[in-house]
Length: 147
Image (cartoon, rainbow, N blue to C red; front, side, top):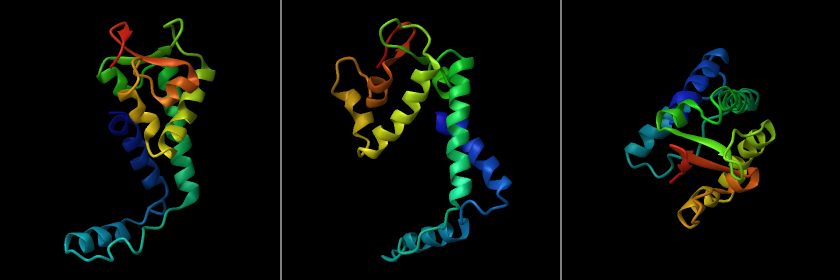
């Protein structure tokens, strides 16, 4: 949900701000057309990315996420939509700035480990992901530990 409510609008804004220089949509479109026609070389040439605009996008999503967590007491628009929020694992109170930052960087660790950091919730009784463990946070739904 946060991709829809946060990342997508920020991405569109930055794409237009970059005057189309962030991401080569023409190459992406060509790759899709080649893949749809069965061409096995469809992914031989990848769209070019501008590191500067990509970095601006990533930092913007990070900062906006932190602002929402602070403003909405542990929730982003996507989390509010599904009635969940992030709280301190021990006190079940609002997370600190340090926890918010640690959790955000923990997403990187969860992703880089072949998404294992996210999938581990299926195997843990407390349903905490790697980023929750690193930040000492937990996802709650209606005042109870979630999912």
